[in-house]
Length: 227
Ligand SMILES: NC(=O)CC[C@H](N)C(=O)O
Figure 1 (cartoon, rainbow, N blue to C red):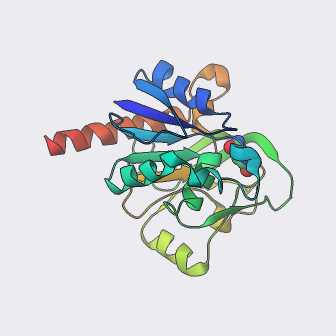
Figure 2 (figure 1 turned 60 degrees about the vertical axis):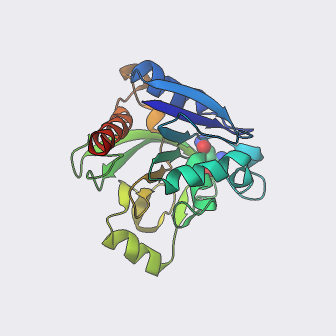
Figure 3 (figure 1 turned 180 degrees about the vertical axis):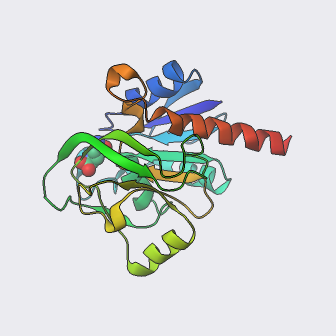
């Protein structure tokens, strides 16, 4: 399986993502520049955390207009796997690939700490290696992680089981403790916590590894079905 790690000006978790899927998980991965016009040959796309375009205007809003994002939208529409963490999640909501928006943390402060989460749906392409309702710990590091959506959208997210991770002890004011969601089709996922920073004991937690293992399992299952 070959992962694309998109690099925007100001990304700072691109290396963490590449290391997680290539060196720890043992799959192919390559950086793809934000000016790229093709995702040919890739099986999954990863959007990293960071401060794309210095977080000017609003986190993710400028990156959303990069050349490569038209390709990411097309890739997602083909049903292929797209995952965004932190700034990557913000870019996915700005691009309209995921519903809702990320606002300033309720405290108006940047928060960086290990955070307990609950896997609220383990029946997805991004969470199948977890147990349902499993408690995990992943680092968070954001200033705008306060997930917001209107009540109609929230009802849809709940009805379609699109809420995949929730906070245990809400750190930022997110609606319904939401830390991560998937789209209705189930192939695009975004979350504020950083699974790529929790893939080895040395990092303090290995709880993030199962997310990437789930993506590999989903990809292999799809390949089998298509064969
Ligand atoms: N670590 C990150 O990706 C941070 C995202 C964004 N710059 C924020 O502060 O909310």
